[in-house]
Image 1 (cartoon, rainbow, N blue to C red):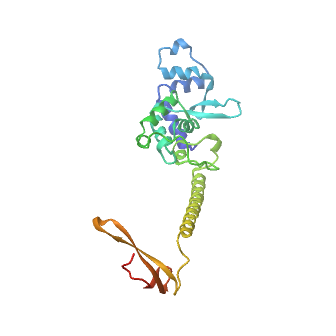
Image 2: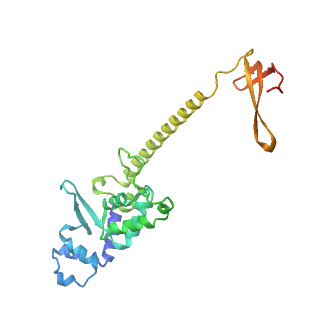
Image 3: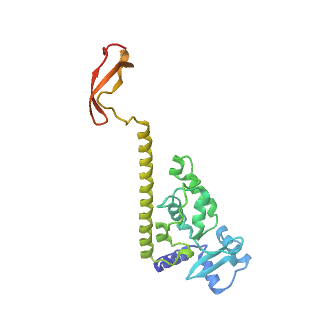
Length: 260
């Protein structure tokens, strides 16, 4: 994470009445007694309950998250309440957000951040999203998974998970541009493939064998009858006199054109 962002988050945590005390308590190594915080907010008491999972690193309060088998440990920034809506907007509806469903949006949030009632906030955000509502709800799955997931512009604003924290902004921008070019090239190949496939199917259904001078063919001429309704008429056999390509022919009637 860039130093300027680290400093900004540290400043914002110092302004949050529920987070600021824990930075001081953790740095002092002293956990307050329950009786000392029992009259505080529900959020502060919630953080007190997970005391052992909280650490201070570079002046920022973080929560240690560990998966069930203990093989993965993640440091989540304890997000000030004032930044929750901004983060949800970027994760769910920003560039690369995709307006996915609750679980996928929540997983994206938890890659970086932690705050109490995060699931309830994500559920409420997805439910109130106007774009999701217009398409009958958030998307529950993507159309396909990339072999290597791109980091998003969201990472530039809020930092990225620590397992991907080795790139500078410049490195990230270069890699992103390269991967986007690769994606566009792949998309163009698929579009060209589909275009060629449709053309082959069309050509197979079309009569492209052509006619030569001296061929006898049936002439079909749909005409308009009364009430402007189609009235199919056949002019009978005609003789091909001369061809100009595969769509223009000069013909001679072998029968009376008025005969059906």
